[in-house]
Image (cartoon, rainbow, N blue to C red; front, top):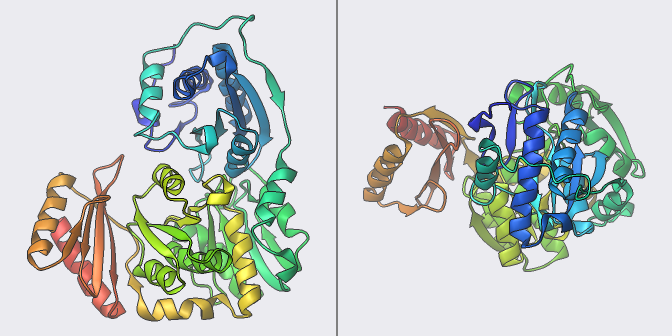
Length: 462
C-alpha cells in the first residue's frame, strides 16, 4: 500500500506531484473514501450514490480518472463520466443531473507533473478543509475503506456528453445578438478553454486570435497560470501587436479567466468584479453581490451606486458558494479570478465572465481601458504581497493593536482587516505555508499607496 503524503490534502482540493505524491493506488483509495464522505453527507447507502466524474488534459489524467472511478465503484457508488472537460462542466453536470457529488481530476494551474482532484457534494458544493477534506484525509491515510464491495455491489459506470447543455446555459447569460464585431486574443494555455469556450464563441462576430488553444498536458510554452506575470506576458504582447480590443487568458482547467485591456494592461480581479457586478445589476436591480475581503473598495462603491447590496466574504470558493446559497446573492467575485453565479449552481465559471465582458464592451461601445479609467483614477491597489513570518497569529495581533490604537476600524472576518477612511489593508495567513498575505489600497494616490504599503511591510517583516 502506497504511503500517503498528508500535504496532498489542501484547503480546497487534493493536489500533488505525480506519481511521487499522488498515484493511481492513492486515487482508488480517495475514490472509496469520497464515496463514504458523500454517503454520510447525503445520509444514504453508498449503493444509492450517483457521482459525476470529469478530467482535464494532463498526460496522467485519463489513468488517474479511471482509478478514481474504480475506487468509487468498488465502494458501491455509480459513476457518470463526462469525459475530458473544463472543471465547471463537471460542476454543471452535478447540478443539472441532480447527482450526489462530483470529482474533477485536475491540478488546475499547476505545472505538468502535478495531478489532483476537486471534489463537490450535491449541488456542486465543494468539499474543503472545513467540510469534508479532513474526513477524506482521515479515511485515506488510515487505509479505509479498504475492502472491495465485490462484483455484486459494484457501482455502475456510464458516460455522457453534457457539452451542448452546458453551452446553452452559459450563453443564456447574454444576448448573443448584441455582441458587436471585435478582435480578441484568446490564450487557452494548452488547457481546457479551447474545447469548452471555443464552441460558445463560434457564433459571435469576433475576429479570434487563438493561441495555445489546443489541450496539451505538456504545456509547451507556459504554465497555465495567468496570475503570474511571466505567464501572461505573451498575451499582453499579442494584444498590442494585433491591435486587439481585448485579451482573455484561462487557467489549466478553465474555471478562471483573466483579461487584458486594449492598452495591454492586466485587469485586476476586483476591478473586473466591479464591472461584472454592474452588468448583473442591470439585469437584476437590487441584487446582492459578494466580494472578498482583499478587494478594492471599488466593488462596494460600484455595487451600491448601481443599487445593489454589497456583502464582504471570506476568501475561498467553499465560503462563496455556501454564502451565495444563504443570501441568494446573484454574483460573487474574488481577486484571484474566481467568479460565481447563482444561476450556474452558485459555481465558478471561466466561460460566463468572458461572455459577459464581450457583451459589456458591445453595449457600452467603449474600449475596456476607458471603462476601467474611473477605477484606476480613484483606487490604488498593491496587489497581494507575501511575507514569510515565524508566527502569523502574533504578527496579526501586533498589527491590529498598533492600527487599532491609531483609530482604525478592525475586522476579523478573514485574518485582520484594518480600515481607515482613505486607506485600508488586510493580512491573512496562508493555509499551507508560513506566510502572511498583504493586500492594501489607498484612495489618495499611487504614491500614498506605496508609502502605506512599505510601512505595513516594514512592520510585518521587521
